Amino acid sequence: MKKQTLFMICLISFLLAGSSFYAATQYIDAMAAERLFAPVVKVAQGKEIAPFEPITREDLVLISEEVDEILPGSARDVESVIGRRSVQTIYEGEQLLTNKLTDTQLLPEKGQARYEFPLMYIQPLTELRKGDHVKIWVKYKPITELQGLPNPVQFTKTNDTAEFLFESQLASVRDSNGIEIYTLKPSLLPSPDHMDAVFNGSREKPTQNGEKRYRDYRVQPTALPAFVGFNLTDQQYVILSEAMSYGMLQVGHIMVTKEQAS
Image 1: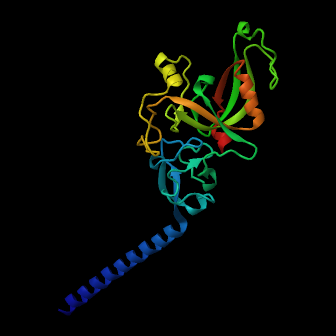
Image 2 (image 1 turned 90 degrees about the vertical axis):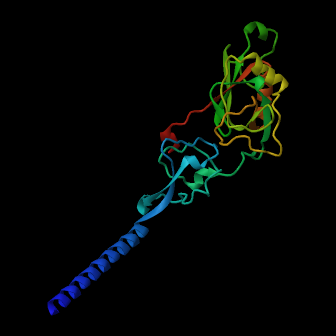
């Protein structure tokens, strides 16, 4: 009887000691993980955030990262990032640095004003989005149509095909209802319906009070993109106004590589 009692006491003591040891190791591991790891917001797998593209929940993932690997200024909460815009391309797996994010709407700087031009005067060379840094060219009309016109005053004509004017940034891309859209794709051979919408406007009923028409920012607009806007100085506006008399304005996105972005 005494042996059985002694055996039970030893067994219970062993179980209690084992449980205490396990609990202690778990607590130590938790404390170590809390000190060595912390949550950080990264771009989700298969995603890439383009400049001035509204950030959606699907773009992001919250993971636990070693504290030593977390960059200063990295976002730690997903909700604080959704809806904001990046000022440069952020690639898959990158941490979202708050100094790369902005809430501004590309307002004109001192000495600038917002000018919007109808699509009939603009030929997109690449896919264009709000915030894109672009190069602006003038593609000259045929020589027969330019005969009788004086040489341009605000820029220099160096060849008979096209002339680079200056670099700028797209401040707005709007559809024929006047609603800001996400992207404008080049269309070198517009259809009759396309051009009819440019000149006469879309027959789609406009939304009311800024109502959201799309579930996600990436959904293609149903109305035709009809206006592109730039923040220009007075001199740049004069240059574009004169260039329109000599040909079509061509606008192309300045490509930024991953190495340049970092």
